Length: 120
Image (tube, rainbow, N blue to C red):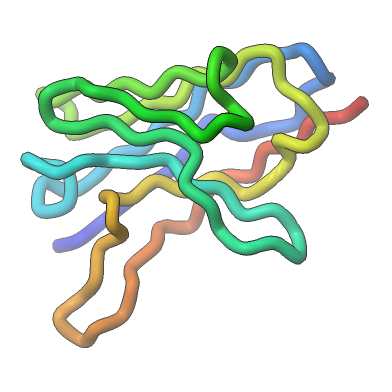
């Protein structure tokens, strides 16, 4: 069964830190490049960090130097350590493979996401 469960979001002051976790089913996680996406109100969902099965990472310019993505293969889990948070980081954060998982019915599957709110 396909499953993505994100957790770890919350309300934090600017300059603070949060660590997000994503438990993924093996069919999504195994051998795939995994990513963290975010969607702010009124904006399109964007990929902010990604990690390959070999551990190679990439980041959007807006989070480079502040966010760190990692994965635990034994736990089928992807993490996003977010430091020096800014109000513009406020969004719902989702994890998924990159590109996102598409079901047999040709729908893009997303988990419920986790809300991150950064106050100024």
